[in-house]
Image 1 (cartoon, rainbow, N blue to C red):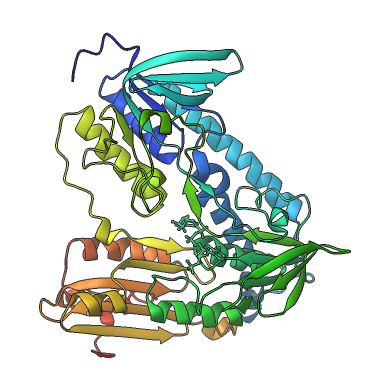
Image 2 (image 1 turned 90 degrees about the vertical axis):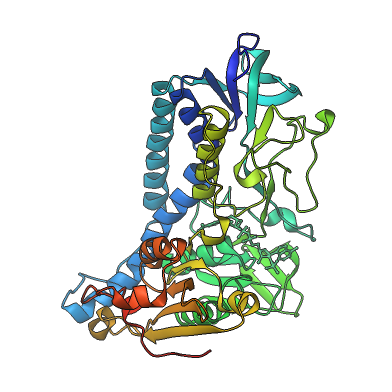
Length: 460
Ligand code: NDP
């Protein structure tokens, strides 16, 4: 590392979300003098208005099915189960506060200086921090931009009445009628959550079928299961306008339908959160995809300014930001040359109901990439539902490159799909073959054992 004495810090991180906090802590652990600036909550989107509260709400929504399922196992409830939104919301708020405290203590414990301030780049090594005590300038040898993304809502008449994912968690009143616009992760997750919690739920998606980019069979299967659970799916349509009604909102769709609902959530994607960061003045701009261009060392066009996570190209996922933070620190503070991150085998879960877990290539992508593929898939009613009476089904699927026998994709829709695919992801990442899967002994009785007992070829 160059002479650091001319700067106050070796590293200044802007943004205390998943990636920023990890970069700050790991850099400090190498002996670097590190500061982090954050003007909102510690933990960023994931902890405060993303993964964590979403998963808690998803658990809450799953109880709906559990109460129904219990009867077949002999359980009788004293009366119909009822749901209290305020209890869930307020318990969630307490839990997030606890996590914010843990993040603060983790940073303090690592010796990282925390500035509760808004940061703006002044030059390649200087950041202006605006906090309650006015503006100060701080210099650093390296600056990491880790400000993540921010929800984006399209412009249409009445779009100001739509909430975004930052605003949906702390509603004062539970929406009896809920509508979400979009067909990505957030739309399918929140329609499942509010449907499970008891709202009349509508999902509006402009395309043929939601979850673009996912395996087609997974998309179709999820669509059927979500519809069975009661989510009203409206495809090939969009919101034309939202008008306040007597009681809630009248949402006019481009297909002519009008839906009366209490809350509209726009889940229409996120954009890099770079407002007022001072990038333009320093000649740093976004590329055509709306991301900050970097090289393999996470360096922007200004080599002292680095960027990671949702600001750069790649899946907008917490574990990806964490992995990038570790790489960045290895490169810049530990002087090691880590193996580049393998973006092709990043597993992901969508916490719609039932959950989706997936790693590697979809069947469609594999067909494009390889001359011949083999597909093994099964769909079945899980053992639990023999007694519960639920008609819910589970899908499991392996996609294999025929020439090498390597499993290039694994997909699941069903209970705990994320938990199961996390393990399968190690095998796919390691490039194991279908024969390796076949030679692995199952765990009985589980649903997951299907992944090692898929013997019948479904199609080529
Ligand atoms: P996504 O990018 O996943 O989906 C956005 C959706 O909005 C798409 O279906 C898109 O349609 C639609 N859309 C875009 N523009 C318009 C428009 N003008 N009018 C109507 N519809 C529009 O974004 P999300 O907001 O759902 O989530 C953001 C990101 O956060 C995700 O991509 C994911 O990386 C991350 N995330 C991860 C989660 C997880 O790991 N479980 C959970 C939640 C979020 P089209 O498909 O036609 O482009």
